[in-house]
Amino acid sequence: MALYKHIGYLQQSNDAAFDKTYAPGATPDHSGIFRCLGCGREIVAEHSRSLPAQNHPQHTVQQGDIRWKLIVWPDHNPK
Ligand SMILES: [Zn+2]
Image (cartoon, rainbow, N blue to C red; front, side, top):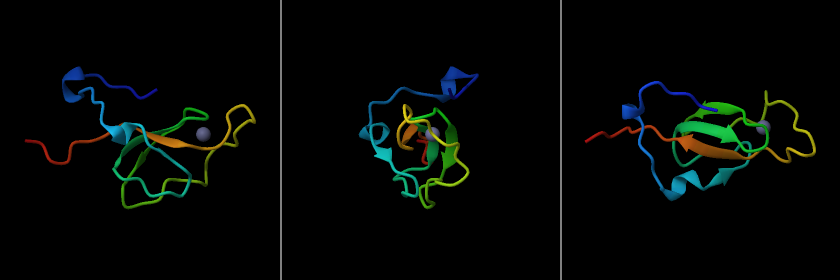
């Protein structure tokens, strides 16, 4: 679970970007913190780089495939 200290730096959003899942090796649409829906591992990824497929713990059958989902989307263009 991603942690934060100061809630004032985070804002809830219903943007569809948070609903999309990515396979290992896919290039995400946005930079941010991603969570594997199988095992809960969280990583920082850039939109210009592939999501990791290597160095990922082996999933159990119950955990299924590695599927990355955006959980924190940094604001690169603050108003
Ligand atoms: Zn995983």
